[in-house]
Amino acid sequence: MDTKRLSNREYDIMQILWNSDKPMLASDILKADANMNINTVQSTLRNLLSRNLVCVANIITSGKVLARTYSPIISAESYILSELSDILPSDSQRRATFFAAFIQTCSDKELALDELEQLIQEYRENNPHARIG
Image 1 (tube, rainbow, N blue to C red):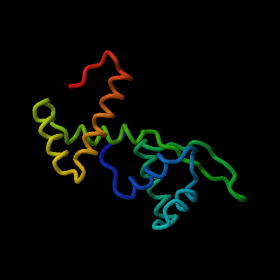
Image 2 (image 1 turned 90 degrees about the vertical axis):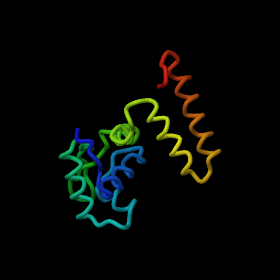
Image 3 (image 1 turned 180 degrees about the horizontal axis):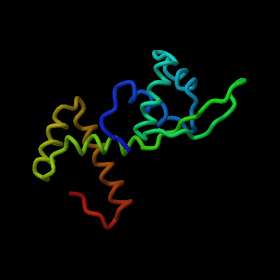
Image 4 (image 1 turned 45 degrees about the vertical axis):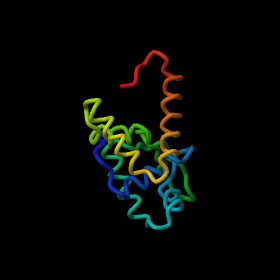
């Protein structure tokens, strides 16, 4: 699986697939984003297929022709984690500085802190023996 950074168009298509509860036809993806054309969608799907980021979930009849449906192989969370691992410092002190700087850039610092606290609490509840850090 090639998790190197997605192009803007690849990311747009992956977002559509991640937000779908079922595999999608290229034409379904096109309907979800009117700023694309079918050639761009199909070309981008071929690239995502070659990088093993999406798979052909099924071949179905669409009108009078057979068509492929696509599903993401990598989750949105896994992709974001792979992106973060490339930019986050490896030592804990530098990581703490990174997050402090991130919070300073937020327009609503209290909301950002509340969301982070909620994520930490949920993580601790779901992983009682894991230590963060």
